[in-house]
Image (cartoon, rainbow, N blue to C red; front, side, top):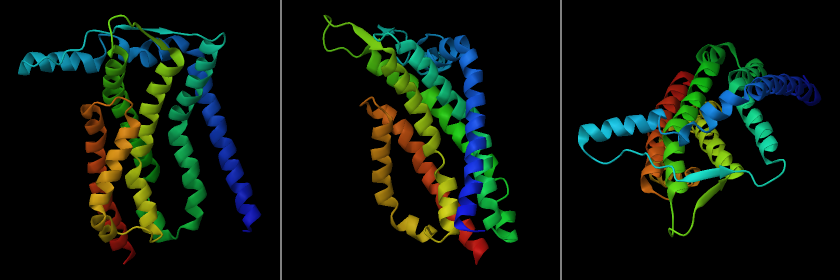
Length: 258
């Protein structure tokens, strides 16, 4: 197939993926009450699962971990602010819903370039890509987002200043934390394909392990908007684990190729 032929095939994969995102976005758009009241604004409610678990843990270990104070209001200061956020949240939700299908379309585009042996060992790629992505999204939503929102929303430099959080700022924080964490959790999949083309080896990853730890800490600081060390460690620790897992993934690929 010519280069233009490959572009034509890729175009249709992208078109079908875009249609899946639109369908998911429409579903999210018409279910506005659930998406916003239960999902988007869930982390600012006292009965959110994360806060209930912290209160339960506080009772067991007798340490004050319970979060009950949400001293901030969410406001909209633009005429079309709420409608714009409705469209944006629907799009992001559409991408999340359609992710398994998008991963499948990507796999369909890559699959013809693999030989029979590579296809055999790449079986289940879409499942693991989806599993890691949704694990990252749930991790960001239930751990990173509520702690960051509580810290930033309740932080005050003076009793004379009331926190009035713009809806754009609040939703951008939620979507960035959850979506970015989902993408970062794809590290083992990225390492798998880089190992297939010879760009990454387990020895290389072990050699630069210390450098990678510094990069992971930087990424954690970027993902978590709150400056507290706890939130950053909550992101960094799973990434350290994923990095170590990626070394085993790379070693597996190199072993099978040998």
